[in-house]
Length: 304
Image (cartoon, rainbow, N blue to C red; front, side, top):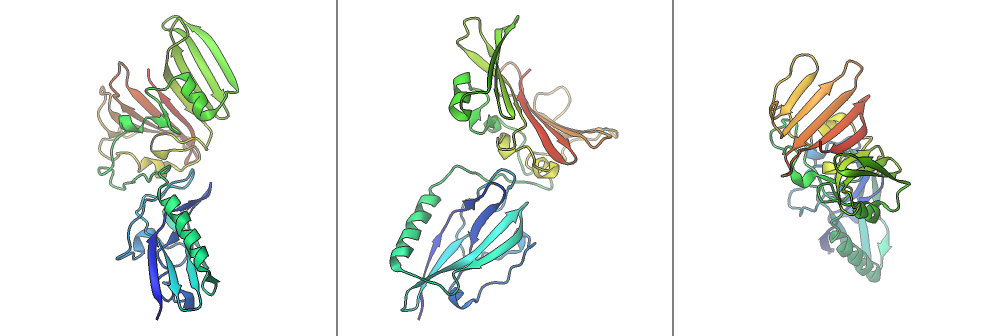
């Protein structure tokens, strides 16, 4: 009689897709008796009854907003252990490919111990976070103060040294005189420019603008260049305002306020999303997202 141990696991990431071991590898897996799941299976149709939840991760260009569950099955039939399961490739919350592994392959107890140690380390990873989406628009939050970051750089409190700590030495470091504050300092990286207002002594400054075109740099709620309009649209509150009948939709909030979301639809297919939030300073902070052919091409965080 087989003895089975089940453990929760975290996810394995690639740059383009989210790969994870899913809880289909139950007792009997070694004989090939696995649940039938095919490519293009929507995540919400899978039955994970009784299987513990794990955090879902996100990778640039691939966002998953469901709680996925996962286990690894180790069955001891007297001759050794089998480590079997299914690996799903998920894009836009839909399974697009799957691969079974280890159905007829025995592994040693030392190998089991090693895998369990790796799983324990992965389970402690908290570098990635899932962002919920909504079709209705009223059960996700508007842009908030906590969202105002760029790949770990806090937009509100950032100083030039923080940029260098996260993104490295800039390709360009340009100083311009400014009548209002003293100086503007622009740090330019591959596909990203951060503009600071600096005082006259050149020592202290405030981040004024983050201008991003690099798909590897994530903005608020994991937004990244290259993502589709509706992937991003559903991550923020929407459908709570009015449409002017020509080009502008108020997603939430009202004209003349500091907390709002709008969508502007151009005749050429260009779409501009703007989300504004009062972060407790003199000026509100705005997230501007520009789309062409349904794809995000530019992201800006600014306050003015």
